[in-house]
Image 1 (cartoon, one colour):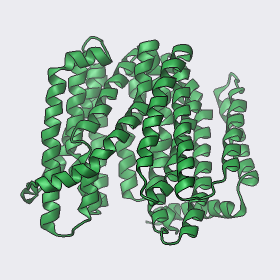
Image 2: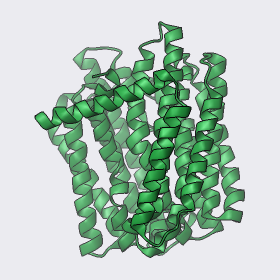
Image 3: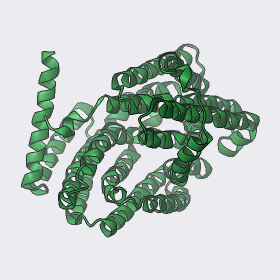
Image 4: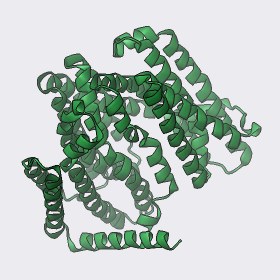
Length: 488
């Protein structure tokens, strides 16, 4: 079995569980919340996403980087204690600000009844989740994958069950969703405290803090630019359209976000180490990057096309009729996630040459473009405008990555092939959108036949012999894994 398959580890599955909770809750949201309620919830999450950056200034990135500098227990214990204590102290500071100014913050972001309460609840939920980051990162760097998976599984299980209780049985609506998240985060943190924290961890070093912050602080501009790029569409939709459109758009956005959760995230965990292991052999390294780019683009387009073609039926079965039009933005957003997904591979040459300042420039420019596109397109096209703004921004970021990567570490990307694959995918989706029979079953069957046919055409026409052989190997490996699980 190849390394590519074997390295999709328990960590990847644990991360998928952690990130998939919002998707798992979608049927609950779309049946017990109106589109307007869901729009309010998404704007509440917008503030929570901003707090993630400032609760400890993402010092966990510096902690993970410095952890491997020395192997002494005293060093690593002190590093842990410093990061953990700093995260708590700074987090409490921003949590206090959120509570003290919750009325003003809610007026600026949501301006609805109970808005201040929603701001307070999301602030508390994110704070608890943030201070759990250092113990969770420790499980990763110490390679305790099973505990990491179990902890995230318990978090998802408790969050789901408590949210169902508060929303369905207590009928608390948005408030119930936020209470459910607090219960889940609190349970996760308590388990981490009981099982992972030791008194010897509670040491503090100013010099270690400075080193970690020096590493992490330069990531904040990129994180802020990323926040603007991923979240500003909801804010502009509220300003130029309505909270109902925010809710409908957000459902389509969540469906499209299955791509980074299930595909892009795990793939990046595997491809990065494989590429970095070839740094001493530049030609092989470049060939590998070029090879992976084509194959991963194929997988992303296949998954994005599959999701988009059946998005109307998915929304029909998943949500109430009030959310029916959300499928209209899924294809545009899916293609956007394909662009940013492949960007995660194209950026590798920049990382190899350690010119990561180019990444910061790219995301800052991308966020500025995103704000402009959202401002103008949403005003004219509503939620479709928000989707196009996201797609065009991600395409812009990918384009800059291509330009910068070729300048610092010439790979020789196959641009004509990539463009042809994307255009062919667009044509197939357009054809599928013309299938509008009264029978949902017939619609699904015809679309499935079209999907299979299109994939066979792509494999036959667009992929070379090496890429075809690679696909066959991976399919065989997957079947081998299934057999392995069946025999155990």
